[in-house]
Amino acid sequence: MFRTVFQRAAAVKSAPRSSFKQAIPITRRHFTSDKPSSNGTPSIPAMLAVASMGFAAYYTLVKSREGQALPRRQQQKPDQQAKPTEIAQAQETTTIPAFTTDQVTVVFVLGGPGAGKGTQCDRLKKDYDFVHLSAGDLLREEQNREGSKYGELIKHYIKEGLIVPMEVTIALLEQAMRESMEKDHKYRFLIDGFPRKMDQALKFEEAVVPSKMVLYFECPEQVMLERLLKRGENSGRSDDNIESIKKRFRVFKETSFPVIEAFEKENKVKTVSCVKPVDEVYQEVRVVFDKMFEK
Ligand SMILES: Nc1ncnc2c1ncn2[C@@H]1O[C@H](COP(=O)(O)OP(=O)(O)O)[C@@H](O)[C@H]1O
Ligand SMILES: O=c1ccn([C@@H]2O[C@H](COP(=O)(O)OP(=O)(O)O)[C@@H](O)[C@H]2O)c(=O)[nH]1
Image 1: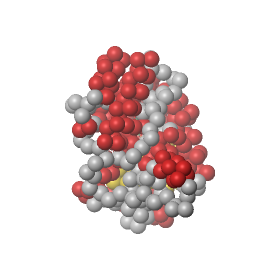
Image 2: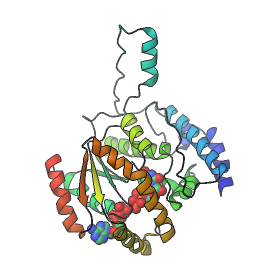
Image 3: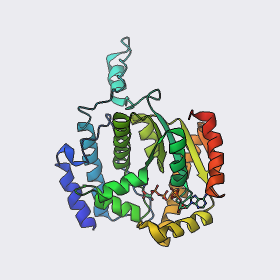
């Protein structure tokens, strides 16, 4: 499989820009490729594949910025008094978010695998007029999309419980947001299951839009395990099995939980326990949302 991934990723380098879904408009970025965590570390060919893919995704995304419909923020002109070298440095390091917080509201919905993020988002989206974007669902959709250059790579990462390189996930999220804005004139988003790694969080907020709030569903591992095994009876998901679940728990603790801690330092996190039945959890979520958002 690694061989196939490698060959595919190499082909992506020279692929036309329309090959990553359609055009995925995204801002000028300076992405770095993720290194997978030490658990289930892929082989060297797979790592090379990721590096190639990262380059290809970067190229695709940057090129596909042309022709986007929604207005973007204008880059501020550097201080006219600044010395030329300072201006050059400022221009090199400034990344402009695709959207402003005046245009767009983003709530990150985080929690361990199986905590109940998707279940609660389903309710919230109806009551508070949000668009629910599950990063995992977008990745699975891209994985299954005929002709996707990233299908095999995503498949591997999901099965191993690893975090797919952020270039792919951020591009899918931004494209989905843009579609909702253009087609449905919806500007409020619940982003479920993302960011799961610090660099994803930083890059999304820098290049797409800063989040307004983080809703964190706290849940003991044993409860999540039972829920996931039960979900696995019908979900058809390649990662709802005991082996993948253990890996996902480890990645959550080691890699994703620090993201929540970092947002806590910014006072952005609202924590709700997800142990009680769905309706009771939702009552607590509503208290949080009623304070923050209009219906
Ligand atoms: N509060 C709850 N009590 C019992 N089961 C729940 C609760 N919340 C979700 N579930 C079930 O647990 C499983 C995982 O929920 P899901 O929303 O898919 O989690 P996540 O999106 O966090 O992975 C699903 O089968 C769902 O029906
Ligand atoms: O930003 C993301 C979100 C998901 N995933 C992958 O998708 C899997 C399933 O995530 P999802 O949120 O759908 O399910 P959960 O683990 O919360 O049940 C994860 O284990 C990762 O492999 C990822 O790589 N990046």
